[in-house]
Length: 333
Image 1 (tube, rainbow, N blue to C red):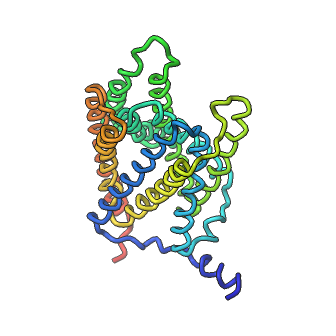
Image 2: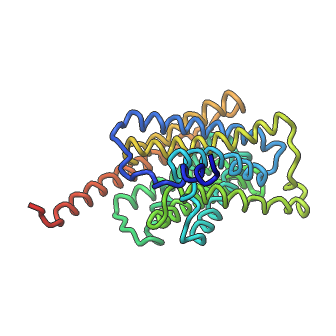
Image 3: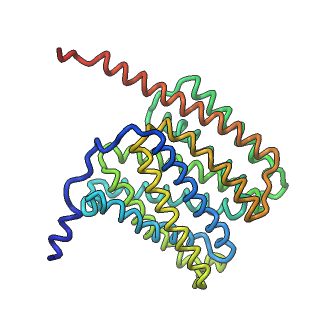
């Protein structure tokens, strides 16, 4: 078998857009499985962060996570097509924003209890609504604005235990601020993906992100020459296993999440993202002896309620738009 014939197996036509079917239970199951994979990643990351700098953790997440992504793309027959793009600048922008979100979120995970960092991360869908209004010109009516305001009030409740100190440079305050910044960058990454989806394949977006983020994260390597705390370390066997788990669990979680949308609508799957709070409380208690304070629980419930309402409104508006398009389409009879 020649190299050309091998490559041809992976460079065929892309997967058909119609490769979806309505199976909500399968979609929900895949979504829940993805939350478990992502929390395995978060747990390994929090343990490894005691001895490994954030830059090295980000590199491990993207480098080892690249292999499951490439495997998925290859199985879909899009391995060669995934590297072809007419918008490399857009992919690099998406990678830079996504990498910023990772750095902020990973640092927050290290500095804060798991439930606190998880609850702050729930601000991402709220930021998406705001950024979509200002950057994409999307119409946002009073219902969603009300939900966003209430959601951000919930975030303030979550942040309140960490912002009560006098020094703004303490670990708790820094973690809270970086967690919020991470949620904002995460939302901006979603906006950039929306724009890329107008011209790029899904396989191209995920492959370019994993590859570009891996290369960009290497820029933190020389930072250790200036700031010793950021110097990369040579991991022992246990730490190397954790770094491998961080990347593989993150990559598998991404695949499971992607596949879940083949079987159910986004509005059906999205609310199950909030099961992460359950995993955060369980893992935080069992492994890290962390018990969330009442403000975090109350604030998280407020944010979750606001987020679910935003998802509900997006779903309803999507149905309304579909009806409008059908009503305005000329009859073929």
